[in-house]
Image 1 (tube, helix red, strand yellow):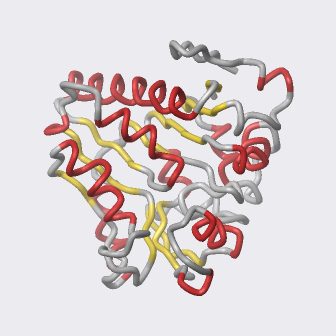
Image 2 (cartoon, helix red, strand yellow):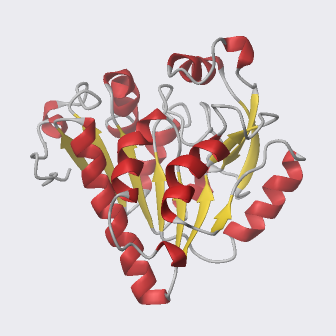
Length: 260
């Protein structure tokens, strides 16, 4: 695991975007295409803004999958991850090869169909975040670390649902769906590279549990410690609870993030 800490989430986003762009270019140069997994949520705003602003990326050769979606939520709802990705990534890049999880259709069929598509070839790079309860995608604690199914139907726990209210996606807990489609932990780990973007002080405890704590289903994102090619991008706020030997490895405003 490579840990990069930057003074602000804007600098964090730019640095993560540079690595993402390099991995997309390298995959297209090597194989004529890149297969990526895209995350959503407030933590990805600066990263996706920076990534879509990088000129001359071969988006016409990129195939995209996404991590998760609420079951039963219309694509027109402000919290819809399909809406999020369309507005913040797909429309800005002109990508045409996208696999969006339709939570308004039969969820088991969506899991099976998208699962077959993602299993057809390796994923070059996955963009992920870490939830306030240390979830990875919508795999809340205790997460299933064993299933080989690419996508699962999951029940969202209360801290996860409360985070969605806190970020302003829903007006109240009553509005937050209780079930979702989520990419499985093991499917995420099958990616050749993982870029994990986690800004903000409200994520500091989850970052500590995921990076400095033991690998445990009770902190689902801790499984990233086992992946040989993971880069974690933090700002000083989200890194604030890490032990000194990790949190002192900080990046400059020029993006020279140090590794841990």
